[in-house]
Length: 254
Ligand code: OAD
Image 1 (tube, helix red, strand yellow):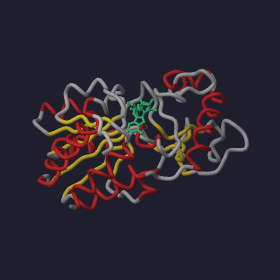
Image 2 (image 1 turned 180 degrees about the vertical axis):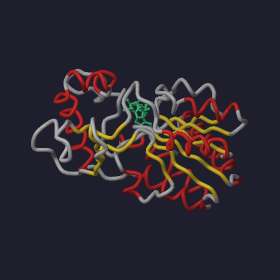
Image 3 (image 1 turned 180 degrees about the horizontal axis):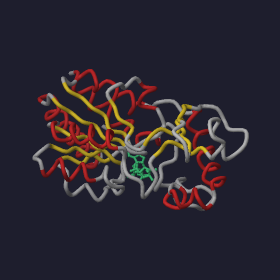
């Protein structure tokens, strides 16, 4: 007989508890972070491989960093865009796509800018921090989707000639009003919130966990490691999103 570690048994029990709750739920919101795309080969922000040329994301993803050195900030984004262009959705993304069909009401709030949820087929979603393939002018109202590599950095606005910037939310910038509003609406209405692969430290997304708890919702966390939210949630499932989420979906289909 193969010995089964206690941890594995506990994880299995947590998955069963989650399935039990989700089978009765008619409204489910999933919130994802960089950990969901880690198994697609995209480095997370705070984990191993998250650093780029010794800079932390908080030193690059800011309006101040861009004003000081737009080329450096764009080089970091081109590095990330290149990795993301080659990445494919992993089993975690596909499990979340399946959830969209399994629940009467479903919504996905992703902090990821990488497009992989959409590539996996999710349609009911909001990109809370924007999208790395969208860009906007720093001066005029020009916006576009641009997948290709830029030949020169920073790219210039074809309308007014000023610098373009990635259409993502940087530290110190507010979440666009409509994005915040739709996310809050779903958090208010949902019965269950599943938080997956986020370190739960960046606001305001992290606060959705405590808000949902405060409103009496059931919160399930899936993460490789404990986070500041772990003590708050109802079920904390430790493991890889790409392994745990397909098991939950399998349980839901049983
Ligand atoms: P982080 O890099 O802060 O956290 C990633 C989380 O995923 C960590 O808690 C890891 O333990 C977990 N993790 C890693 N691999 C995993 C796996 N295979 N399965 C499950 N969990 C895994 O990323 P975020 O929480 O998304 O914002 O960061 C939030 C925001 O900070 C980002 O959207 C970005 C960043 O700066 C902006 O750029 C505005």
